[in-house]
Length: 37
Image (tube, rainbow, N blue to C red; front, top):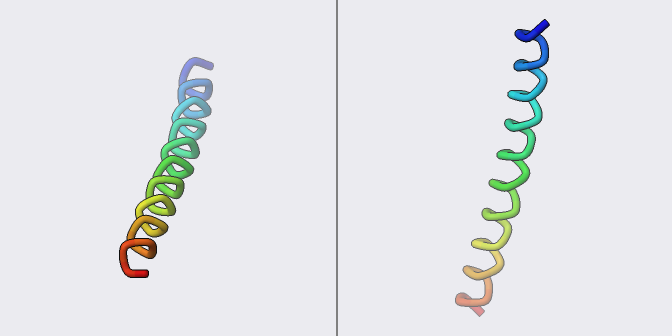
């Protein structure tokens, strides 16, 4: 039981990390585009 719940929490954490990385990469990309323009 605890193993399954821990796995679910880990899954959610991974999803949140992926979303955060996407947001950070998007911000950096927009900043780079502004700098180029």
